[in-house]
Image (cartoon, rainbow over all chains, first blue to last red; front, side, top):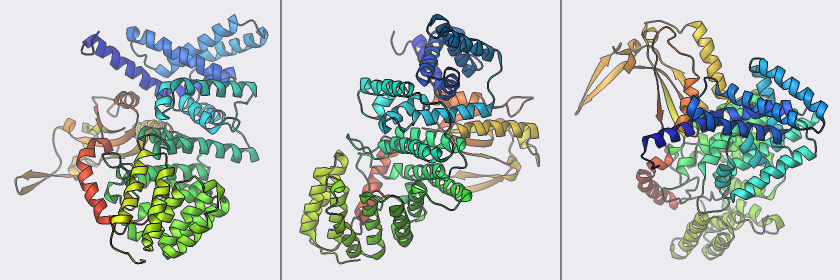
Length: 431
Length: 146
């Protein structure tokens, strides 16, 4: 069949429709099934089987009026069949089968139950027992409605690797009997931070791709944002969730300004701010307000969001409120002592108080073992040296940074700047 | 990708001083909440009747102002929302779940894709390059993540 064949085209369109329905419904279907089966791996398999059934039947029968109910009912029937066939722990399964049958008769779940199930699914997929990367793959699969192939392409990882990562994650969850529940009490904070970490990892993988030829993979950013927005509605009283959403919204607002058409990165101060997406900035600032309304404490995501907001509010680079950014970074460094944050603080200090002050802080980090292979350290140092007119030293540092980065585009930019140290005859004085 | 979902006007939405039916407001509120919970709704707004608006007609160098109301309700819009989804089909699926804003009659919703960065890339590059050159001299370091 050729692509121009009308039959084929209709079939393709229907296929895309089914995929769209799946994207909308799969998380809720899987969440509901997990509550019933208490096994997220099994729930996902059953949901997948329902999807396969839909792909087989809907081209003939048409898309049902309530596709979610259809998918859930089909998956539940498979579950009942499976439990009946399975002789192991027969009585327990018979009980479950009866429960499932009873549930099948009842109307679709109440909204609140669905929300609770979804939240439980989030906490299971992002459980700290799993490596963050596995959590990311599992979350995209269970809550983002992505296929393994889509996840593999997004992470530039071979499909079998992702598939194996997901299988292993599901097995770990089953082996360790991780309960399908929303943690409470002191456990909640720790578990929530692991959820936020997974979502932010997905976002960052899209926003500043660590490897490969492209600086950005915007679809991953969109996936992470969608997950963050879902979480913000599920846990509206958690300030850090709004902080993460705000941070992602504001960073994403710069998407179209931070890469040229040829894929070259454009630094924050080079960016044409008229291209920043005002809608996303507005959403980010609103999310910050939501967090502030809950209480006055500021966690790491909210602090980073507020730093991003300082840039977002400045119409031109010179309007940036650097003293405020220094305060925010200082607060952040107290919460999470980290050389990377200290490096960012040094950049802010250099902007607020001049390159000398910044360089003193950067030089203090020179012996930091965790930054030994971090390309941004020599890159920042190079820039400060350049501003101080110490061009030969700046050049060496730019080259060192270029040798350390794994991103092709970034390397090119750093080498360009290294070359400019050589050819630039001017000796800019301190600003 | 993003889509603008445009709700077309109906005789009810064009009625002067008319507010939406309370029951419909509740249903729309529930629907919009569902979109929000799914993380796909970026923005939404409703529009006042066209009697409160105007048109500016361009003809060469002249500009003519025409005050509302305008006839042909079907060609007018009564509200819009912006959805961020994976594909047109997903936007369609969401829109199909919306309540009928004109329960007694016909109501039409138009779905249009919004231009994204990559669509504009060929036009932007030149501008960006110039912008970059201009600012290069006073470039502070921003290789570090802001």
